[in-house]
Image (cartoon, rainbow, N blue to C red):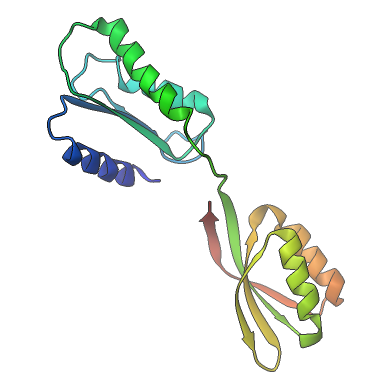
Amino acid sequence: MSPPQVLKELDRVRAAHPKAAHLCWAYIAGPPTTTDKGMSDDGEPRGTAGRPMLTLLEHSGYGEIWAGVIRYFGGVKLGKGGLIRAYTSSVQQALSLVESRTRQSLLHCRLLLDYNLLPIVEQLCDQCGAEIVNRYYREQVEMEAQVPESIITEFQRKINRISSARIRLTFLSNKSDQG
């Protein structure tokens, strides 16, 4: 999720809650170790909302995540400590409900092979977690597949081994993400 996407979502949330006094938020746009992060106290005293929320996100181990907390009453009765507790408690509760997915980089590749090798290659793709996205039946079978980048060297080695290097493997584009 990119910063513009987060800001667009925040605009959508703000429009859905026009009477809210504050919409404080924090995000991590990328893997947990990224420096692409942002936060806002949205009019609350400095350091009482956005920073504590971001700190929780940073320690959650999640990447590509954002949190927004809406507050309808804008008074000062909570004090700074109370505000920090209120915002962190809200994010902690939300984090306990998060369902996470692991994103992995995929490489889009083309395999050109003889028909007799098709069942073996399909089985190998299934075992390796490669997804066959297209098949073209011509003089030879041409397959397009998405292969996890983390296993590409092993995948190439196995393709060469099962075919005695008769399968032509080429990469069609750079990485894509799945997850």
